[in-house]
Image 1 (cartoon, rainbow, N blue to C red):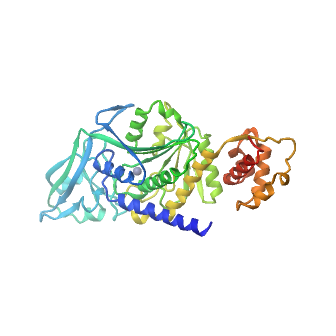
Image 2: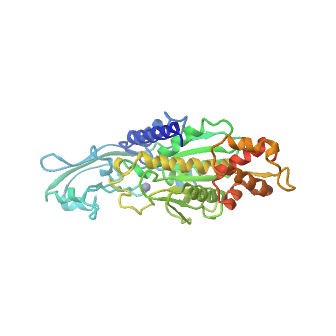
Length: 431
Ligand code: ZN
């Protein structure tokens, strides 16, 4: 890697971190101003279009819920002190809580309090989207410090007709066929899940928007988990067919090894592209089969749609202690890890965009490379093993093998195979 490239990487990592820091304090949910404000901030980075879908709209088997907004919340003791304070952390309120004002004994209050006894310093993240409930989340230590007295409880929230907001960005390609990059954007102050995924996606969109000749159209979707993907699919039932490959991005800033979760069929081009890129990266990783839990790949892979959407993550859904707790904070993620994740996603998209099949135009024996100036051309690049890559591409370009097939067979990085194909195209040896 050149010095300049290294410097760019560092700047990109810092920019992703800065975006996460800007978004971290906002109280997001599946609807409401926090979600809208978040999308407006993303729209400063990329020309995102915000869509509003009214509450009550039927979407597939669901309905868009009422819009939730919250201004303040607290539990006050007998001295009027806030012993639990929404202003200190938005995780303190069960997300989507109905409004409440009450005076309750500690005993009455207890059934509305959630803690993590095993992690006494952390606040859990809880939601009550689809039933009318209210509650507070606090650390076990805070709970243990509560005296047996009467408390003033307030959740100054509202649940009213409004709309669900999502953001999307389309970068047109030569074909209408699409690659979808989808991230959920509904969690409040949590970093890895999923501000890291949002930041990687936004900066990828920004990078790819600078490329002029794209083969596939790129679609970037930023929507609340589950209901947002369902709403998008309901509104794009026909258009969704254009999605040929896709990824959900989540938990991309932590220290865990990469995990790629396959599509339901497990044999899609995205599955092979992700496996190839992770293998060639030398990063420790694991490939796991689809299961109908996790993030919005569940919706995209449902039988009515069966879109080839896999999922890339580091820490896995529900499998690390910080998951859905206040431990998933700014110090749990790093610019370096997000940068690595960015590199993997970028390379997967490059494989999909560049994976084509060609025919060797001089298939009778090996063409004489020297005569055609190809040895000289090889000297002008810094791609290792380019000569061997040329020979592989020439041998397997019989119309039946794609460049990804060739990279897998040759056990070479797709970039070398793609560069070899470009060189051969330039010298009229491929069509
Ligand atoms: Zn989550």
